[in-house]
Length: 94
Image (tube, rainbow, N blue to C red; front, side, top):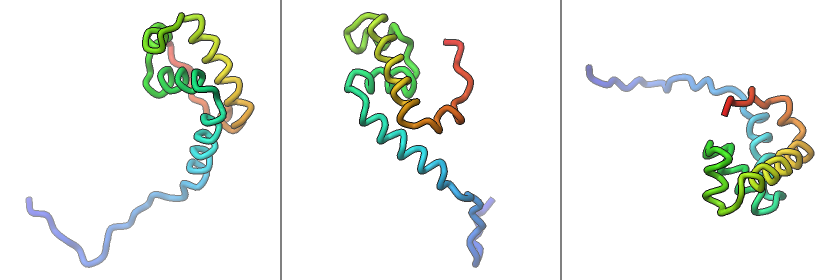
């Protein structure tokens, strides 16, 4: 089937993303306020979806250290960006 160009562009119904953008900017700013180790744990654990054992291996520390830094980082993020609590999905079984 051949592609056809129309004289008028198709509607882009993306809607208003102001709230999502503001939240994203708040999270980025809050991540910058964490210690380097806390930030590394958050990124590896929640963005890269590694297990605590995998994060410990990558960072060259114990699983207990990963748990401590992760706990402290999440607590700090909740303080810095309280609107995250309203938007946090169910915790994974991992």
